[in-house]
Length: 138
Image 1: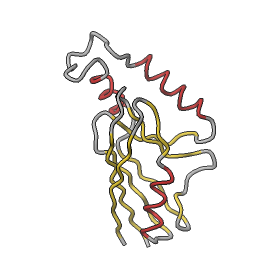
Image 2: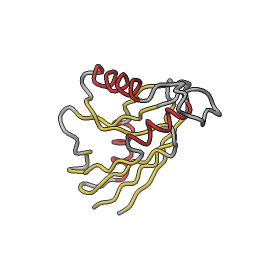
Image 3: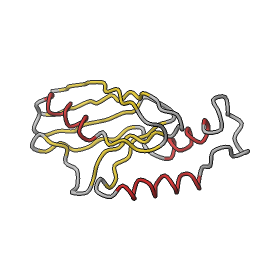
Image 4: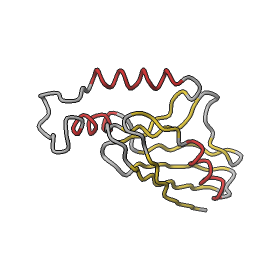
């Protein structure tokens, strides 16, 4: 069985949004017990990350590291059509994942105890991001 849905996630600007529950809801609608769930973010300045879901300091530290590694307004970048965070957002998305495939077991995402799936917004301004969730299984 194959099931696909689109989710539209409104971000608050740069940072992470936990999308585990929304993806699990799509999985529940698919009514499969075993298989895989692929999530794709259809944007070039946002990404997906599976990381710690208990302590928000982990996600803040990841953002701090990305800010140091790929700073806004770096004169290295020529692509600044949408502002000083434009090209850094593209680099951040290229460094992280735009597609994540997760196992499904007993009708649930088979994540580890402290794992969650997060949409990582790399632009400073809020955006609405489109996620395509495809579930394959039995």
